[in-house]
Picture: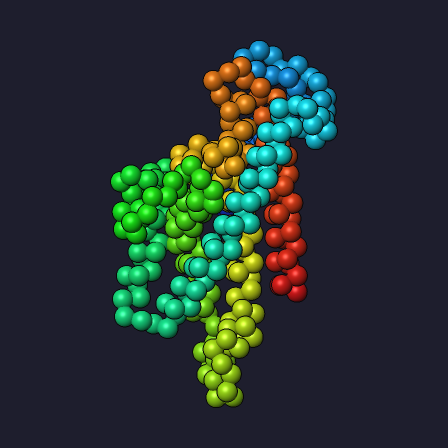
Length: 301
């Protein structure tokens, strides 16, 4: 009996340890690739560092420069980069939320080839942003591109505004459309059809059914996609880098491009200043994430 008791205790201990063993690899990766770099990045933002020598502690000097020293190049770079990033977020996010929602509503009507269309819309998401951007780079090419050739225009898509922003937004929306589309399709499928049918019998129009039934029914996934899209677009980097190089006149030079150039550019590295800028960007994204959490909890109550 005593042996059976000891064996039972050993089994219980193994059962208690099993979840931790499954979590351990993920926690280790989180620690190595996220938590440690994040903590060091915050520390580096309070230093003067060129990536090679030892970081020299300067306190809040980097933050004071980018927030108060209007004569500094870093001040101009930070605020111009943040402004361009915010412009991109404001332009891009509505399209990235509403366009897949409209397509999901059309697919919810169960048209022929529904699954095929859904697969086609989702397919760009499977490719890297580099390959997607290069594809659209050729489509918008001034001399050989499809758009200018098809419509008989001579638009300098990458060298003039608002065309430069249009190319970046179109590329981004096309690439990320599929992810939000899948979420909306699943959310719409969960709406009770009897409610929609009852509303139709009462004379409700399609617009009223959408506003008073569909939107409240999918408000949680809708809020989720809005906030996730905002967070994702604050991290814009590859599209303007490849398509416009930040031009024309640095009007599409987003904050992450300045951060990358300061830390890993051709000149002397200013990694401490780059870390301060990236920390500020991280705080902005963090605030948006907190807002997301609060809004979701309110919807659950």
